Length: 385
Ligand code: HEC
Ligand code: HEC
Ligand code: HEC
Ligand code: HEC
Ligand code: HEC
Image 1: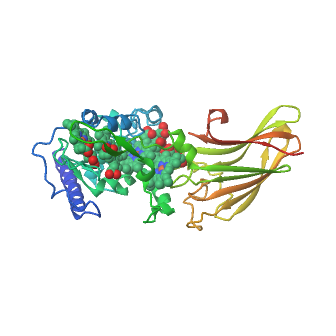
Image 2: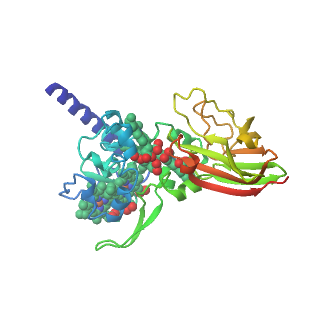
Image 3: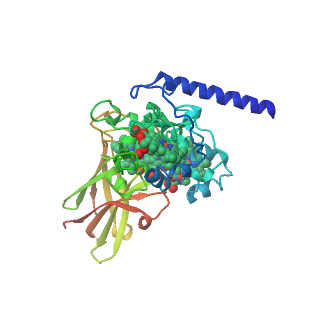
């Protein structure tokens, strides 16, 4: 036991040493290293995220309602981890600070204040200092001992938890990852700029939202992809394009599914519907699934079944992205739409269908009914006869 403890102390010291080494090397702006910075004499004892609240009220409120703040208490996570009896879930849902194990390195699980999920320390704490960015208003004397550091803005603050299903790899294949005017990293979309009000000691300034808007934010979801439709006789043309994310759509999680659905009224007045396509990175045990559009440029045909109202023929094309047109998917089953790519369809409807509604539906998990999905886009069409 004592020997084990000694070994783990040594391991932690080695890890911290490596981190300090990395940080002191610096990586671009800001150039000051942690070691060179003046430190306020007595850092406060800050044990939990709620200790930050009195001085960082807005950031705290944003974080507390975010998926990071909810990562441990989230009922869905609680259910699937059997109340975290599955300890494998803890390192990402209730982590120790990333700067402690090192940027890009797998996080360790925390043993205290689990209910705070991905807490402030996870991203900010390095020894007794708080890593900050370019926002610091010359306030290295603040009680939380903030130091400007490139580490907080480094992609490797996010990768330890977010590359499980290759969202970071996906991002690297997009034009957003190319340095220059079009560059946008994860924070560029998921931490939009917000106003911070003046305090007793500081003027009004800009901050970065800790809500991390994404799939739990309707506006972000709707901005992720666009849908265009057209009609030519009984043929409906549809294009779904990922023009709003910096990675595949829907992102990351294997639970998510996006369905392209046609709902139609028959000449006798009954309402029928059929799924035209589904975008998704399936569970590992869904062996029967194979993407019919494996490579950019590929075409395929299939049938959409409206039951008694008849069947529609679907001709689908995978339209390459302007940037990186030959990019590969990581899994053969994967039907997610990579950033910049589109799916184009010509759907020839059976005679019996009249008024037609095309819908793009987002599902938090693939087993949800259409009625339980989030409506992203809708287009009502009159088909000729
Ligand atoms: C390598 C880090 C990592 C591990 C380990 C991990 N998760 Fe997650 N989990 C994430 C990230 C990152 C997200 C958010 C991104 C996303 O939606 O994929 C997430 C999201 C989730 C969500 C979706 C929450 C929602 O409401 O949208 C559930 C449920 C979940 N995890 C359950 C689990 C369970 C159960 C385990 C253990 C078996 C686990 N996770 C282990 C990183 C991890
Ligand atoms: C007693 C007040 C106080 C407490 C408590 C406090 N801070 Fe601070 N903090 C400040 C002040 C003042 C600044 C400098 C002004 C600013 O940037 O908001 C600052 C700056 C920061 C910065 C740098 C922000 C930037 O501009 O880049 C970070 C990061 C930070 N604090 C994190 C934390 C965290 C995390 C906690 C809790 C563990 C915490 N602080 C607790 C007062 C406090
Ligand atoms: C210690 C692990 C960890 C780190 C580090 C981390 N995240 Fe997360 N993140 C998670 C988990 C876990 C969730 C999902 C929690 C849940 O839904 O229960 C999440 C959720 C998110 C979401 C919201 C997804 C949704 O479903 O709405 C975004 C966006 C996000 N993280 C971006 C980032 C970015 C950008 C960084 C780097 C600055 C980062 N995260 C760092 C673990 C982490
Ligand atoms: C150009 C903007 C943009 C960039 C860059 C971007 N994202 Fe996203 N991201 C989005 C949008 C829009 C959504 C919502 C649609 C969706 O879930 O696919 C999203 C969704 C997510 C989700 C939610 C996944 C889920 O299933 O709940 C996570 C996690 C995420 N992004 C992480 C990242 C990470 C990590 C990076 C950096 C490697 C990144 N994003 C870069 C726009 C972006
Ligand atoms: C998932 C990682 C992550 C978590 C969790 C997190 N932060 Fe941040 N924080 C960042 C990043 C990234 C920045 C932006 C750095 C930049 O762009 O300059 C930032 C910026 C800040 C800033 C300065 C900008 C602003 O908006 O005022 C403060 C203050 C801050 N964080 C405090 C906190 C506090 C307090 C908590 C917990 C309540 C917290 N952070 C949780 C990653 C995180």
